Amino acid sequence: MPRIAYFGPSGTFTEMALAKLESTGVFGGTVERVPAASQGAAIELVRAGEVEGAVVPIESSVEGSIAPTLDALAVGPRLQITAETELDVAFTIVGRPGLTLADVRRVAAYPVAAAQVRIWLAHKLPQAQMYTSGSNAAAAEDVVAGHADAAVSTALAGERLGLATLASGVADHDQAVTRFVLVGPPRPAPPRTGADRTSLVMELANEPGSLMRAFAEFATRGIDLTRIESRPTRTGMGTYRFYLDCVGHIDDAAVAEALKALHRTVPMIRYLGSWPASSATGTPPPADEPAADWLIDLRKGVADL
Image 1: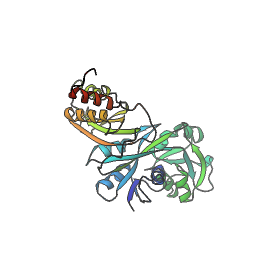
Image 2: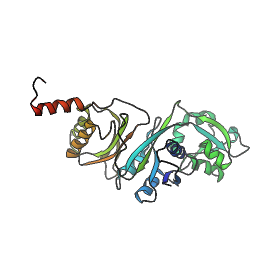
Image 3: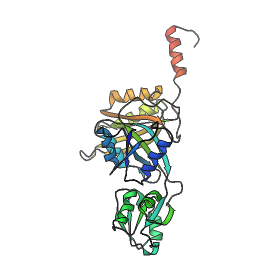
Image 4: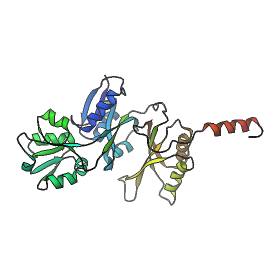
């Protein structure tokens, strides 16, 4: 039975994402779930060889990319993403049994969760102070520990801890979605499906035009970039890493050509993987076969091409 780490403790949306991947056959059977205190801690368990993979959140449709996950993937021995899934995210407000919303004076919340329900909290609990928790499930545990009266959490965490549901389906934005990825040791990418995502990290030379030249390797080949983000390297002011997602697979000729071109010119490029996208976005890269067949005919000396 494979051991799979996840951003815990038990009851987080990340555990739900792991369960969803498990139910769709990604692991080939059941797994042993290993909770970790943070996204980075889950990823480090993979690097240490203590688990076969880790499920971590990587992007929210409301708050954008999950910075701790991006930072953990960019440094240390290279790991690879092989699968993803998405969850609709709405929160449950849980509290000590017998309390009502009017009784709540302190609310525990993971910062990403608090940001996604700030309007609801301002309207429904304007009197409440915030208590920062390490995860959505940890927020519920903080209620049990007496640090807060209520928590922005999940129904699963509330049920497991015997807390009362004070409100459910809480979200400032309809159709809020979070994307989760499965990270493991480097390996051959899953087979190309035609609806794939490829991700990489780059550090560019600090000179005029370096970013434009890197982007041009995708643009000239008709590759659709679906996410472009910079994060500081933390080595000095003005130094950044660039995270890119594109439509396509390393086995698509256009994507492979772009990766080779970047490797020749970019000081640091890290391939994070190619895998089936859970929801197709953007335009697939152009097919290579017509151009490849044309070149073969040229080499053969075929006339009237």
